Image 1 (cartoon, helix red, strand yellow):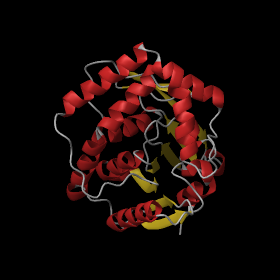
Image 2: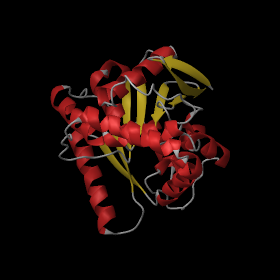
Image 3: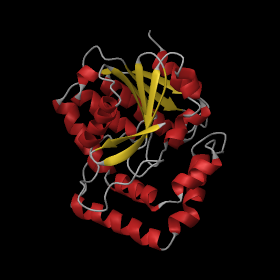
Image 4: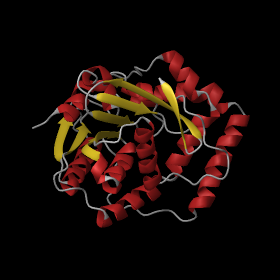
Length: 283
């Protein structure tokens, strides 16, 4: 475990294993330990890199003012800076869960020479993304809301419980497998709430930015891409609609499309073996 100062912010970074580099990055509100069940499958064959974006996990928060709102290009640059800070300059397998699927795809488009493989784990999909107006004002509102909630001790009182409930609803096993002491330490802070609100407030803007990159910065034709979709085994309209959108994403990217069942949105909890297989498969 260690820290890298990226753009002035100390980021928590963890590196394990040996072999070709594989970077894991989680979705909205995720911390490094959400990948704990996947790492043992990968570490014998890959150098596994995990990091917490500012405000999450053990990473410091970004300054309260003066920093731009999250962008796809900005997150791609953060990934590049983490790899460079670790001295890992060669091509890397990038694994992005949920919202971080936008981030790793942006990285692959902006840094194709640094990308060996792309794996989107139940990645976010927006077929017709349109950014909302007044992004700077929305970001200031997110900061202000987080500040007010923190002053009222809302994250301290409710943060870990909200994390637990969200995780339980996102797995077929209906439990949060993350260590309880780490959940309490990381999710009762105002910095985590501020990071979550800022990222959520910019979600459609980041989706629209990536949509523009798809038109102007094509992926390398020989880049292996895998879309791994979670199938909870319920034949509901919601599940079928989600799987259809994941298939459309795979078609758009020319990707290998896979489903894993039974699994909820936190695929790394329900089927860590399937996530590792998508990374290690060389067929």
